[in-house]
Length: 229
Image (cartoon, rainbow, N blue to C red):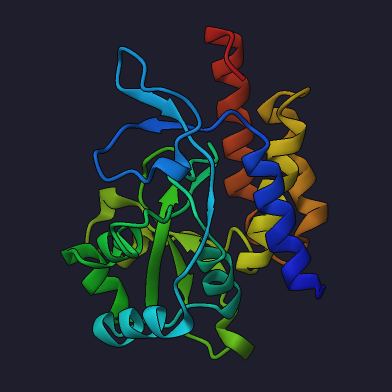
């Protein structure tokens, strides 16, 4: 198993080790149901092996004039999974009956169109709902392994809303978030985030330091005010 495959598999192993729940949909495959539906419409779920291929993603790239990192495509097509909220970031899940809808939705809007025009490609969401996570495709990279920023919705079509690089690549995002999901079982958010600087010294630990220190400070403040992590 190559390093890329290991990072992707380690992420899913950690993410799937949590209690996984989602709101029931009529089209949810029975094979993904891991419990009955409760009174509020929620149920536990389990992943299924993915069936999408590279061409499915290339069709989206052509339609929206975007480029995806090879690692992002390999990650997304590995499983069908009903949710991928990792607290600090929200990544696109993969629902079997709605092929690639999560990826399409983040690309099919006016803000995304403006960003794509300058080779900034949205793919997920920043954890505080401030805006989309984006691949910065303005510089050619091997296998399209672009650095990651986020775009602040408050700026709408003003590119001043584009953050510094917060992860040097999608694989480094996965490594940091895998670590976070493991450590959050025993530690507080504000204690974990600074460890990203060693995991991703060229992104989180370089241009992303101010962003992540602010996230850490916010988490600490919330913990002190509300007893949250």
